[in-house]
Amino acid sequence: MTEENKDQGLTAGRTEGFAGLPYCVIRIISGNSDPTKTNVGTGFYYTSSAGTEKGQFVPLIVTNKHVLKDATWCVIEIAKRNPDGSRHFGPAYRYKFDINSVTIFDHPDPGVDVTAIACAPLLEDFKAKSGLDPYMLSIDSRIAPPGALSPFLTAGTSVLMIGFPNGLADEQNNMPVMRRGILAAPYTINFQGRTDFVVDIAAFGGSSGSPVFAYFDGMVPILDGPEGVAGMGIQIGGPSIYFLGLLHSGPQVTADGDILVQPAPTSKAISRTNIMMHIGFCAKASTLDDIESLVAARL
Image (tube, rainbow, N blue to C red):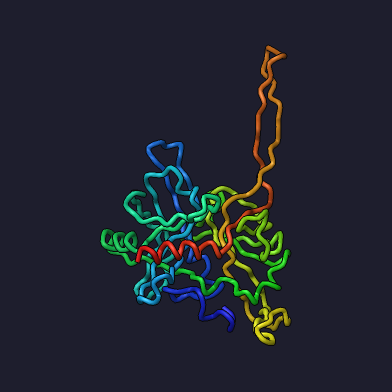
């Protein structure tokens, strides 16, 4: 992490900055009594500062509403903390819980596909039942882009997305997949009038809920120009990262293929195949401010 944000955003663990990003992410599996209705998605640890004045910090798992839709149970894949405080690399420890047994903070706008699970009780229960110390590295609002960064968040800016596309993971080490792309439109605008931004990264199933970060490689935006004015240029430095938001969906192209059904040539069935475009729609980090308000109301 650079001088601008080395003390920001990544907490509760020894690994900091760029190298620690994959450790914030967990795989989520949810479902109900119908075995054909299992969902696989991505979540990430996020520490709410809503109770800062009371000395309280509320750990959350942030994901999309549709990852938990119609679910009665949920499984999160947890990493173990080693005795020296480092993250253990090995198969995930699966922890299953009933959806109705936890506090969930759905974004109040039905059109915003963001939700958060209060995970402190889950991690405490996991520790009590397993005897293992869970490893949790979280991000928080301090790593969100400051207003002064806006001139740098143009279309073409490099971004990173971390998650489980099509459920893909390093099963042996409980690690997600990191992918790189660009902003497909300026971050400062609300795409199609929604609190969304767009990335040029394919939005495969399982990636829902993946956190997205702006990534400045080897250069650091100068944010403290005269009277706080940004856009004064860049300086050479290490990787610089900023939390932009989370993926929720992606457009698809429908390919129509004719299937001939013999022997009745007048009968025709149409096969429809949805093909993912290399585009992802993401909810902005600011939508978590509304989640913070819901958390604060419960404290």
